[in-house]
Length: 481
Image (cartoon, rainbow, N blue to C red; front, side):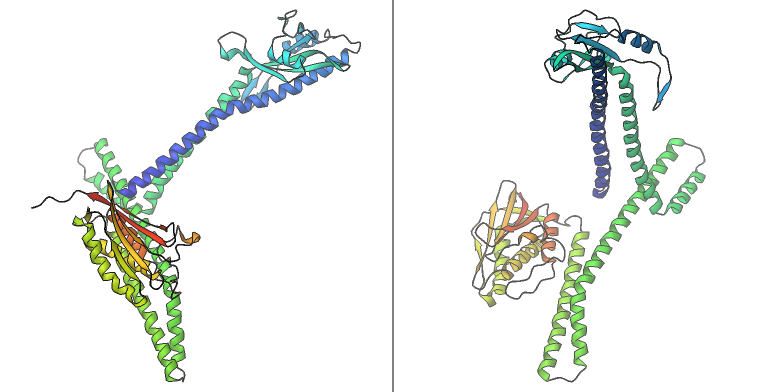
């Protein structure tokens, strides 16, 4: 299984896991939301009942006599109400009225009359001027028999003369909760399956679908005997091959499109300069101006050539999956060699490149590519160093890696560029010339580091300037022959 296939499968799995986690949260949130909705309705019903009792108790005494025949008739009533697929046939509402002492003076089901409910949470809190509600099972230890109660105060004059508690079995709206859970899980599962099917369909559709079918039909015809497992394996193999072709084709098209776009953008400026200079050369002008325009053409042509050469090198490097023949490399001698070559580049502006005595360490890799990577980092440091400055190169051996650090004392990296410096074609203007490079040097270093299973970073140093660090996995020194 290739790396890109693993990434593709990983994305699908991440999507499935994400949907699963979201579904679990949604399913877990359904019951509280239904309970909140039911409680809100019970609050209004309780206050409606309290207002009715208050209207019938104008003499200062609680009067609930008229409630009994009403509820007897209500409980005897049968009807059919289709509520989102659930058929409701009877009323399950319960009403308890308690006096100021908490003693039940009315029970719609005629079961608790005369009992002391003063310690029931909703009655106790309501009689004390607070909001009261509770959920309690009718049968101890059986949550399925739970009933939600909400109470409202009965006020006669300016005092609380009692409380009315309205209850509703949780099971009556629990079936809506179960239905909502089933629907949510069904939608989530359907979504995951649909995305997986869509991925397969797109793979088959984009990559030679007719040829794939034809190949498979020819294979089936060539079989003398029918074997379903064998045909199934062949079909799966063909689909897998088609997917691999589609993946590589799409990746290649994206890669080419990105490169064409960026190359067009970068070449546009020097081409415009060349065209402008060429048009001006067709006119009569002093020899000095003519020489200046010719020099511009040469300079911009060299810029395009450098851009194309760098781009070809980077493209070749990106297509290289692994190092062909990695060898043990002593880091400090390699650094000393590159530093000696870089000193000439800094000489015109008096920039000195100095190695710092470091640790003896070995890495495994391609010496030529590592020299190119370090040279690019040094060129970058020299370009951004002020005249007469010093660029230092140090080797630090850690337990599992070797760090090669290049330190300059230039202006450092602007905040807006910190996360862009390794992007292709991104470049900052050099302080002394105000010109930009091809923007491929650091991208080249990044690819070399990745080939060596390492990494490269570029950050601002604490006391000014920039600090580039190339980290490569460390190996033990090779044993003497």
